[in-house]
Length: 320
Length: 320
Image 1 (spheres, rainbow over the protein chains, first blue to last red):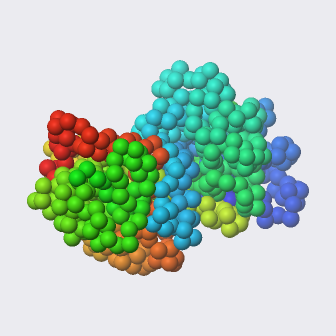
Image 2: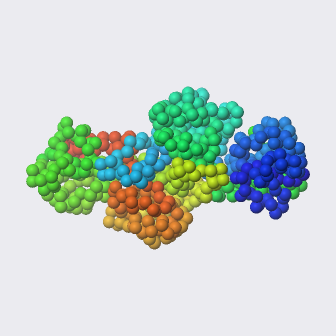
């Protein structure tokens, strides 16, 4: 009962670090979940996963000795934390570990969308820059009110960066934050109505599903720019695409999508988008640090003493 | 002797604001400079120009009653300021007016190049994002040393923004700055050697021509990223292209070029570039403000009293 299960092929990079000291199974190498479960299901005590990949509770329920789920990234929206808590399974994640990288990327997306950097690049690549055809119609960012949805470690890092651009920042989130260094808007709709740049940094869970819907996009308005570095599920993506097509929203810069990988065809004729492949938090440096933390936690839990195990379990996100 | 000459077609937007109160000539509407000079040369006392467009002293020398050159932008590298000073012609520019816009754009270019935002966008557009093909190899920006070349109003605004990304900032420039809030490197070569991101914000003049040459690019190195929001003349562009092709420089994000518009073919096979069409300082808001300032200066000089004229002349950049 000390085996480790890797649930998704994107966990391949961590395999080599665990294999020398642990029995590691790659779920995707078995013909089916059933094949795996019948042979090794009872031996698994730890799952290592990306956090955003969905792990079915039906699978979890059949891992009768499962005690710990280690999410390598900062998110854990693919795991039903409440279900796990009820079944005595701790869930840990690298919460906040990649906040600065995500915030840097969010800022880059915001400026790229606002100032039209991707469009400008393509404009030159197509050979359309001519002497009489250079004056752009971008707006300044100075003084433009910005809104942050979710003022956790990422939201705070984004707010700090936008403040350096002389953009006044407000925020909104489902939880109060007594030490918030920025004013909180009365509601998400009011935040959107008072902002021209809206950056989504909130946690993804049932309460934030399609939080940004047609009404929020309408409040943000035809001069508004949406940036999403949270999760695709936070946005009603069909409503977003419709608003962009109709010119009811100026631009959107997205690192996360309703389904990932997002199909290229879905965005082919959607104007004023900047798209990146869920890359905001995945710099080589942060990835190395997050993998290191995950390996350390697995080692402490499976090879350490009672105190080591206690330290790992106390990091469980269920208490947050 | 109160006529105004617009020297370049990109001055068309200002024409309507001047025409109601002034006699305005558009040089490009005449068959040749000679045609214009023989008919109206003696009547011109003011030129309005973009600042970066070259105005030949041979032309200036034949405008015998020229007293003032108004540069609409913040730069004036197209004007031979020393020659003008010797000939009693004042040169004014909107120095610093677009510093924040340029700095925002520079920051956007830096992040886009460093984190590969344009490349990522194209990656998705080409349909190449697949489940097993998403892990990028970007590096973090946190803690990476950045260098600013030219710590004027733009350089300071860029340094302020990079500091918000937790990048330690040094600078170098040809002039001392007693109040500089960042440490000065001993030389440009040392700045490049100690930086992984180098942002060019300096003035373009004879002393800064090809300031960033093959040796500086070599010092910046294969992990280095160059951002240029100054002028194309500051960089040896052939050396830059060679370094990018050979992998001796990681990436370059350029808003300015050796010749503008830069030909698309010149960059077709050059890897890791982000290119924008000299758009950093030209937001609609700042453009409106700069045109307003230029018109105000022309009105004060041509329609105002002695005190008004004195105020315009005292803004001459020759004294800087």
